[in-house]
Amino acid sequence: MLQGIRIIEFEAMGPAPFAGMLLADLGAEVIVIHRPDGENNPVKQGPALLDRGKRSIALDLKDAKDRPVIEALLRSADGLIEGMRPGVMERLNLGPDIVHALNSKLVYGRMTGWGQTGPRAQQAGHDLNYLALSGALFYASPPGQPPVAPPTLTGDLGGGAMYLCVGMLAGLLKARQSGQGCVVDAAIVDGVSHLFALLLSMGPMFDPAARGGSLLDGPHWSRCYTCADGGFVSVQCLEQKFYHQFLTLLGLESDPDMQDQFDAAQWSTQSARLAALFATQPRSHWEALFDGTDACVAPVLSPSEAAQDPHHRARGLWNAKGPTPAPRFDGTVAQPGPIPARDAHRDPLLDDLTERGLL
Image (tube, rainbow, N blue to C red; front, side, top):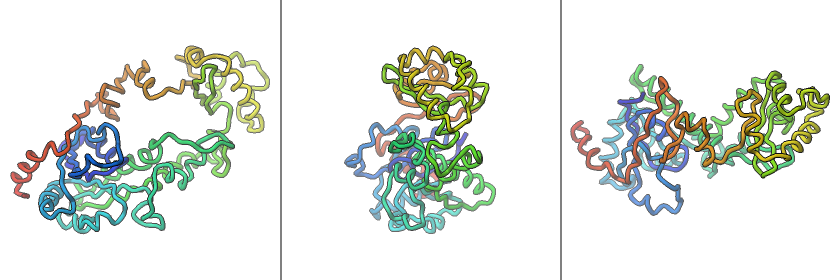
């Protein structure tokens, strides 16, 4: 889908390389400028999965002899992705003003936690901190328990990388029309705050000031329960017809204490009732009972279990190298490119820049 688009990615951690991977999965030519000493980075990121489908060249951003190659790459590109703390690229003489002087059509994508401006812009932070300050972490557990959220998924990726990709794509479309690039300021706190729009649109269904008091985090029909074997099941049967099917399968369709679905005063009692019931059987029992129904119940799977789930296997969501690209176009599952060795594409990239007359 993005064939013909060239993105230069400056090596970083977390959401920025994920955004580069996603664009590469979609067909863009993503060239990652790795640090020459990156192999000695004390922060280990595991397999270089986020480099899949990219081309690699190792360059020293502070070394004058590598500067012509960096500038040639930027002149050849449609977009740039960087995940440095605000001001770092400027100190490297690679800020937006300098880069746009080299290539006015380039879309300059910036990935940070706090944003390019504001009192916290220069302050360190990580996923959990951005979620906490945005308000999203407030709802990440039942009342009375410390909030816990799945690592990186909501903040770094949902509010960060995905918004960076949307911004990059919008900027690329505009550049194609106007011939003028732009700067995309993708801050995780901005993205996570923007995600609240759906919840706020629910009006009285969502209480932004109370944990356990909203329609999605308080009811007995919108939470997880512990099973006899220590496994968990998720329940979220919001619509009344689904709630009725849920009760029917549990044999509670005639129980007067379970009929009033939306009376918040009864939720704690009803939750305790269901907690005791789910604790009587292992997860496999409940999984079999609700399988194929519209009761909106699903087992809580570990990542390794999820990779083997029949639905996921049928859709080919995982292969031996990790998750397959998303979304799909015309029903086709794209095949991700290989993970390159560091600096693997130096020679062909230098040859390409020379042929273009840029080096």
